[in-house]
Each structure stands twice: as C-alpha cells, then as structure tokens.
Image (tube, rainbow, N blue to C red; front, top):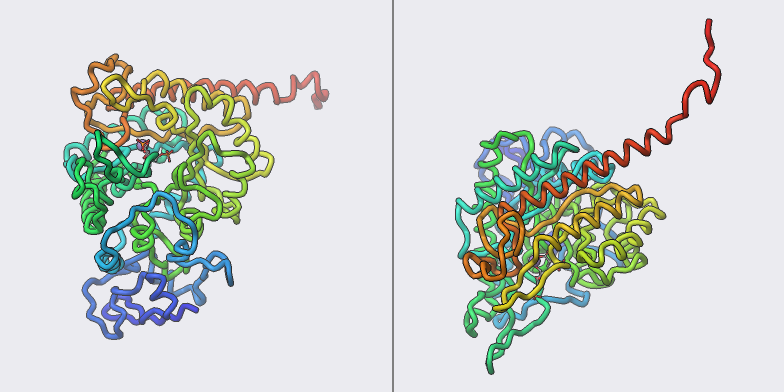
Length: 492
Ligand SMILES: O=C[C@H](O)[C@H](O)COP(=O)(O)O
Ligand SMILES: C=C(OP(=O)(O)O)C(=O)O
Ligand SMILES: [Mn+2]
C-alpha cells in the first residue's frame, strides 16, 4: 500500500519516501524532496507534480487510490514488460539504456495531472456531441526541423482551423506535438542496393541518415526528445497566452509507442492515487500496436490520461469492444477517442459496423477521422504522398456515415504543418507530383501544408453544416404535428 506522509516546509509540500512498490513503479514523489526536512525551494499552493490544490488534498481525509486490476491482473508502470511487444527498438547497449531510463525517471513531468483532467473533461463534452476535437501536427517531430517559426506556424494554423470549425461547436485542440517522435514502421529493415540497415524509427530512437551509426538505436536520444518537448511546451504555453483565443489552449499528444520512455514519464498523483503519463496530455495507441494482450494495451490501460485508439481496416467490431473493455472498463466519457483511418475507399463500408457496435453497447466515445494514413501512395520518384482529394473524400465519407447512423462526428486527426511544404499533392495550390521535391521536409509521412490544412477545415465545416441541417430536420419531424392534430387546446 502507498504509505505517504506529508510535511510542510514553509508552504512547500514534500512527501516521505515511497514504499517499495512506488520505487518499482517510479512514484512521482521521488526526487520531490522525499527526505524529511528537505529544503523548500518554492512556496506553492499546488502540488508541484499534479497541480492539485494542497488545501483540497488536505481536506480529503483518505486519498482515493486506484490501481487498475489486482492480484494477477495488477498494473504498475512496468507491468507491460511481461507482455509481447511489437515495434520495439533493440538497443545495442542495455546498460547505457538503463542509465538513461534512470535519468528520465528523475526529470520533472512535462504536463500536470490537473491539465490532463481538464482535457478529459473537455473530451467528455465531445463524446456528448457538445464539442469537436481537432488533433493535428507532424507525422514525426524531428531534431533537425525544430524551430520557433515552425512551432509558431503550426500553432497558428491549428488555431485558424479551430476558428473555422467553431462556427458549429466549440473546438478542443490537441497537437501531435511536444513528444511525437517515435514511429512504428511497416518493415524493421530498409535495404538500399546491397546494404540493409534497421529502419528509421523516429528521432527519439535513431537517425534518418542511411548509415549504420545513424540507424543504431541510441538511448541518449530519449533525453534530447524530452528536452525538445519541454522547450516546445514552453513556447506553446507562451503562444497560447498571446493568442486571441486565450481561453482555449493547445493540449499535447503523441503515440505511446516507446514504452520505456512512457513508463519513465509516469507518475502517481498524490491526491487521486491515479497514475498519469506526464509526457503528454493525451496518448494514443497506433494501429500496429493495439493487440489484445500486447504490451501497449497493458501500459495504456493503467494510466488515467485520455487515450486515443487508431482503428484501421483490420479492426473488427468484436475486437474493438474487447479492447475497450480493457482500456475503458468504467465507460468514462472522455477517456477514449477512436480515430478511424479506413482510407477514402473503405470508410463508407468499414466504419459503420464499428460505430453500430458502440451504439448497441451504449459505450461512450469520441469518434474522429484520420484521413491521412489510409490514403498514402508512392509517387513517381519514390516520394510518399497523399492526394488532397482522397483525404477530403475520406472526411466526407466519415461525416456521411455518422450522419446516417445518428452518431456525433467528433472531429479530425491530421498530419499537417503550418509551413508551406510540398508533401501532399492537390489542394488549392494544385500541387503535382513534380512539385514534391521542392519542399519535401517530412521525416516520415507526408503532411498537409497550411493552405491544404485550412482547405480541409473548410470541407469539414461544410459537412458540419449538412449534419446540423440533418439534425434540425430530424428534430422538426419528431415534434408533435400541430396542436390541432394532437390535442384540442383548452380555451378558457
Ligand atoms: O506514421 C505512421 C507510420 O509510422 C508510417 O506510416 C509508417 O510508414 P512506413 O509504412 O513507411 O513504415
Ligand atoms: C503511426 C500512425 O498511424 P497509424 O497507427 O494509424 O498507422 C501515426 O498516426 O503516426
Ligand atoms: Mn504518419
């Protein structure tokens, strides 16, 4: 059991050392002054890790402790290690890896638990049909392409898209940003000529250059990714403060793929007893790592963050319900965001069965559409690209399906940037395959540029208008006819 005692030192709360369980589990209090009498550095009214009010914590006589499962089913931040894992890099030097993980565990959380809870509450509104979710950013953030101007441009483009969509409903905005570094790959190795090397798995793992040294997984990269995420968050918070839409903020998200990094970022909230992966507000499980019984499901089921789940063409209704039983046993609105990525040709055929399955079960979920990953093509010259028209067509199909089933089309998940890159063809600039080499800068998949992203927001906006009109028609049809046709009016 968690054994905590709190001391106050000049208004700064410190916690006594964790029990052995918390030591194994990377408890959040480690390092926050766990020695009684540790020096107070700040005078805070809120828990330094969770952001919770100390007064509220003190008022709660027994903190609610929730660890998913018990006995053989018990969860802790390392329990995923007993499960089969896919897409995990093989580090050549296990000791060097262990040293970096130990360092990461000592570093402060990047986001606070109360911010995570605020996002979950907003996502619950999306699940109830009262708001929309816009999630977007790079396929893969990179060390080389990191600059204030590109962050500013992506922040601005996401804001502009949110404003375009908010004519219908309030918009919750979440970036694929400040931690979106790890990439699952179709193939573990890449071969050029006679040379075969490990595939590039994102800057948090290895380098993109095609040479043996770059492609060897290097644990030091996790520390650099952490630092870049912290710097990114710092700028995003400043940009949020300077934005005209000050009341809304940009939350962060990434794929929970590199589990040693995610586990090292996982802290226990001293007030609720829940575990939070403090590397981002929202974490999602990719289409390649969502197996029942697998390590990624095991890790994600135990963290209290809102979770995304990619649903590609191979997802069956039965499998989806079983995965949701694991990830969201309490059926908590805002906990799960389902991200369908069926492709323009598949969405109308494959999405309805999944939506109906949730409707039958009365399960809450946010449904959003990733129109990127099911529409990737290889252009002449070998560039991966996505034709804007196919992307737009999947968005239209997604809205049609939800309209037909009376379900809330909750928003979009996009690979996009605020820069004027040439990675996806088509759109208002009518980019051709010949234009791709001009500014093809992505480290992994092709992104919409700012103009294309805003054009896609316009497509979604017009679909939202159709959905709203359909809802109004339906409501009108469901109204009692006219008073004369129902009950005679009482005239006095
Ligand atoms: O972002 C998603 C995947 O990591 C990416 O699509 C994989 O690309 P690959 O098929 O070239 O490995
Ligand atoms: C890997 C990704 O997508 P998916 O899991 O849907 O292939 C991604 O969104 O970066
Ligand atoms: Mn991608």
